[in-house]
Length: 80
Image (cartoon, rainbow, N blue to C red; front, top):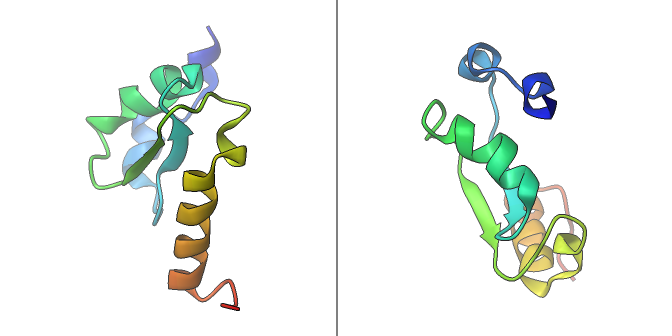
């Protein structure tokens, strides 16, 4: 099973992350990997991009806006 190779609940419990994911609401990977971990790591925020699948998510304006905001917040991007 593909999901068996994903981040396990044990390793997720000890992992440190500021951001959980930015996934499309139609992304099958969200159902396979993200949703099963939500109960274990509810403190990891999940950003859902409406109307996006797995491949086209990065092309959506909402994805680009959220990514820029996250980078600006971390100081990783320069504002123009």
